[in-house]
Image (cartoon, rainbow, N blue to C red):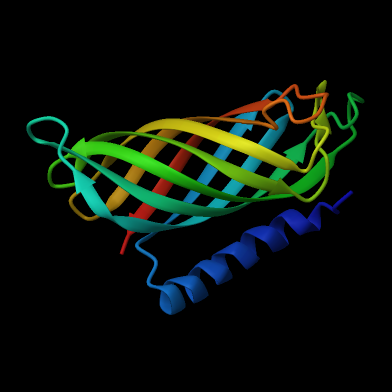
Amino acid sequence: MIPRSSFLCTVLSAAFLCGIVRSACAVDAASFEFAGAAKVQSARFAAQWNWQSQWRPLNGTKLVGYWDLSLAEWRGTRFRNTPGRHQYLTDLGITPVLRLSGETGTGSYFEAGVGAHLLSEKYNNNGHRFSTNFQFGTHVGVGYVFQNRLDLGINFRHLSNAGIMQPNSGQNFAGARIAYTF
């Protein structure tokens, strides 16, 4: 099990890495998300790289895509279904995301993505158990991008191994996200 202090270390490391990645890899945006579910919380940092392609499916809208590379720390408060026991794990994910927004990219949007996640250990919290460290992650979200490029959103995420092995109870998160486009 990862000590409690590792959560702060992960947060600080991710912030530091976002700065390095931004300057070294021409990141298009960076985000922070806090999410939760019954007996588990997650703090997630991510960097985004836009795809070059754009599609205009409806008058006045555009469909764009981006890669989302994330580092998250989970804190379960009912490890092995025992009240008061904690589980800390790290989640590294990569997700291609499609976003439908107004033509200028500001204003409201809807987005969805399916990606891959690697967990530092098998999740076992509050009756939810993963049999593998590798998980698939899906998300849907809505949000608003302001003129100053600040992006505020909410989302729903689901992680599971898609039946590769049992048990495969999955875990759902509801989250709030703040992002900034460079």
